[in-house]
Amino acid sequence: MSETTELARPPVAPPRSTRPAGGTIALAKLRDLALIPAIVAICVIGQLVNPVFLHYDNLINVLQTMSEIALLVLGQTIVLVAGKMDLSLESTFGLAPGIAAYLTVTGGQGLGLLPGGWAVPVTLAVGVAIGAINAVLIVRFGLNGFIVTLGMLIVLRGLLTGISGGQTFFHLPESMMYLGSTTWFGVPASIWICLALFATGIVVLGFTSAGRSLYAVGGNVDAAKAAGIRTDRVLIGALVAASLLAAVGGLLLSGRLASVAAAQGNGAIFTVFAAAVIGGVSLSGGRGTVFGAFTGILLLYLIQNVLTLAGVPAQWIGALNGAIILVALVLSRITSGRNQE
Image 1 (cartoon, rainbow, N blue to C red):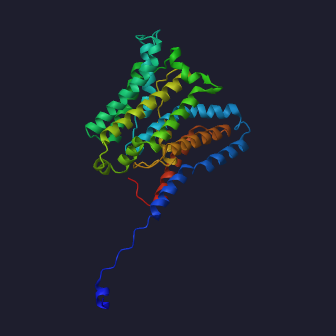
Image 2: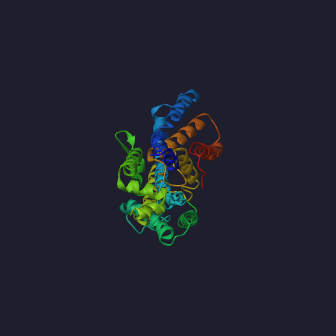
Image 3: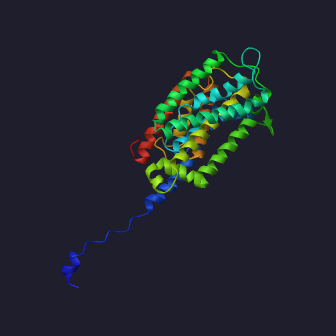
């Protein structure tokens, strides 16, 4: 073969390197553990600030109060991974147990139409119904998820204020208070429930076809459709599951406090997004893990507890959550090299 022929032949492109993909996978696995050093550091700082921090009673109190909001974080993580967001979870957190109390409590505060044993099923049913309404509006009618859930947040909050008259429901039935007030093996039941649900979320999202479908839909819905994934069903399942988890979280809080306040859940969505974002869950969909979200909410509540033990006013805690979100977004932008939409 002549030298001229060799020069005329187009150069063969080198095989595409697989190192970036492998590095991305390894980085994703390490990202799950990224907050562990921060959690350890906060524990050390907390013990130095106040020796009470590492006492059993204090840690159990942190975990119990965290467990209720943590279920909102779990629900929001599922929705975010699917490429959507649900702002109405904080109102579901209050309205679901609020309607149950309204229908079962007697003595002027409620209607007393149902026996106390119906309180838990009603709470769960309301959570499912709210999720189904969101799903119909977002998936079937193609409405903007942010606007729909923002509107639902306002509607549900108004409903709770209306049925309660702006007051707090007391004298809840025993069935409604059980999960939030009882202990199993010396540990509050709400902690066991929270851990069990997060463990289930880790298994489902990380090791099942349903979880892979969720990530596929959140990453690229058109590609997911082309791959044969029933994207509408995946999104509906995510929205309904999130609302159900919010209802369970509200039930746990109501049981612990033995009441349902008219303002229950107000403002919780800010903590929820802060925990999800610092836990590595992407607001753009398709990225993040349940374990990362759990470490995010744990870190936030440990920080809040340290600030409380140090005598810092509660108002600064809200400012901290906002600052954490902004810092986490900046770090995510720097490390990923991608614009955030």
